[in-house]
Structure formats: C-alpha cells, structure tokens
Length: 429
Ligand SMILES: [Zn+2]
Image (tube, rainbow, N blue to C red; front, side, top):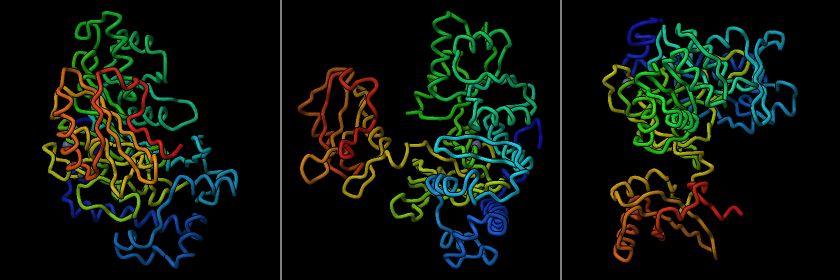
C-alpha cells in the first residue's frame, strides 16, 4: 500500500491478464461460498436452482449458474423481511454503519466490511492521482447515502487531508479552495461545472489564487471536449473520471493516460446484452454486471447495474496497469431506446455528427404513431447549412452507423429546449 509511488498495489495492478483472471476468481469464489454459507437469501435462491458454488471450478460455472441480481430483488427482500432482509449474512449486532438509499434500501456494514469497502474507493482515488499530502474538498452528499463518507474515508486512507464539504454552497466551496489551498476536488460533473462558473464570476485567477491540480468526477459527461472544458476555469487542471454505484463501490477509475477508466482488478466485470443477458463480444457496448468481493454484511452477487457502457478498451495502457479500461457510461439501459431490435446509442450518433463541425446538439425522438416505431433525430446547426443536401447525407450515414433508418430534422441552434432530455421516448406515454 505505497502512500507514494505509482500504484496502490503494484503487484495486483500490473498482473498479466491471465494472473488477473485467476486473482479475480479466487476472490469471487471465496465470496460466493461465503454468501452461500451465511446469507439465507443466496442459499435459498441458488439451492432452488440446484446450485452450490462450493463445487464451482471456474468463472464459467459462475456465468452459467448464478442468476443475475437486480435492485428490485434487494428492495423486495427487505420489504418482505424487514429491516435488513434475508440477504444479511451477519448478526445485526455486528453492523456498525447503515446507509439509507433510495428504493428504499438499507445498506449495513460490519467494521471489517466497511474498511475493505473504503479501500476499494481508496484504490480508485489513487489511480486518479490523489496522494498523501493532498488537500481534498469532497462535494458529495454526506447525509444518508454512502458517497460523501466513503470518499472521505478513501482519501484519508491515502494520507490526504479531507474537507467534508458536502453538497451545495458553491460560493463557499470556491472561497475555501482559495483560502485553504485545496489541491483536489471531488465532484459530480454538473457541480464541478457550477464551481467553474463561480470561479469565473468572482474573477479568480486560478494560477495565482488557487492550488487546485486535480478534479475527480463521476456522473454524466458527453465528450472529451466537455471534460477538458470542466478544468479550464481552474487553470486547466487534470480531470479524471470514476464509475461506481452504491451497491458495488467505485469499480473503475481513470489514470493519467485517459482512454477510459481502469477496472479495479479485484472485480470480475461482465458486459452483457441487457435483453439476452449474454456476454457481448470483447469491447462491445452493453450493461455492466459485477459482484462485490469485500462485503461481509450484505454481499452483492452478479449485480445488474443497469448502466450501459460504450465497451471496454482492451489496449495496453502506458501507465502499466493491466486491467481493461471502461469506456464512457452511455446511460441507464432502461433509457437507451431499442428500435427494431437495435440499441440506439446516443454516442454512436454523436460520432457521426462530430464529422460536421457546423452541427451542434441533437435529440433522439422515438415514437409509435401507428403500429411501427419511428426514429427521428433532431439536430441543431450552429452555422449555415444546405438543409436539402445535408439531410439525405446524414440519413445515410446514420443508417450505416445505427442500422436503423432515421428521419433527420435539421434545426437552427436553440430549437431544442435546454432542459430537453437526450432521448424523448414517446412510446412510453
Ligand atoms: Zn492507465
């Protein structure tokens, strides 16, 4: 656990892929056996299918025999068996921390499980570049939910000084950054943008007045350009992304090389087709599924996150870490429309439109006016365009990319309301 140096755990982070697979399986298999032995929820669920993980030989047994777990399963279990559900694998007296998530869902942790969970978050922060001696402003929520307190634990495990800033009060955050010489800010993407606006409004010279060097973000981000622009008001600080959920923690974090977020090498992560549940081809887009391997109180096994990723970057990374890099999160799988059997991934459309600098924002509209789904892509232009010529050209290029023929509407900039969602699926109404 080097407080200095390049890696949090040099041995596991730089293992060969085959060593990593063995490492992941060792951790996962132990957790499967633990869950089977200690959690009535898993034991009953698996026994009903004739599954006993103690007999598993490798990941293939896990893929073919362990059912997916959804948030709905967790909520139903707690509702049927209050307060902690049959999933609880320890004596309730051993719980030292309880989080209350929307659902509602209560997350219990033992002391050991909590420390290990915090280490998962710490490793992620370390990958992003946080080091001992940093001063970190945490802008995540500290109340009820895990985010604030776990980021807090994580940064302190690394040896940084943490300001428990909490959400909101953007002016005060900026004032504190200036006064205390904060070096790292942890924020949701939209809040970091808000803080950037405050810096500009106050006429703060980031190079003279601030000591910020790194922003760690989570949440929706549209493009590399948008990401870079987040750092601009702070004097062009590095911006690194993380991916995680309350159920499984931070499982992917971006190193200084970019190109996606390194998966935490302790977790066996699957990318599945959300409709069939089958693995997608290597690198293809799909829903993220994984199991936690550290929790004692409430193990989370083969959890469907509901988040769609653009895929995994399998190229070796110059930083020396050997895990694949998780590509951008495209959205909730329930929010990505499927038309005539095809996912309409906003990023794919964005890639096509990026070839045309005169085009700006777009919106995907799905409707079923009669008996057939119709896809319309509304696109704003920011400079004069030849609508009659460009429209059929875009229809052709988009059809090649998404394999569904869309209608294209070219509109002057400002036509799509600022608050409009990227996807407007009118079939649901
Ligand atoms: Zn890397």
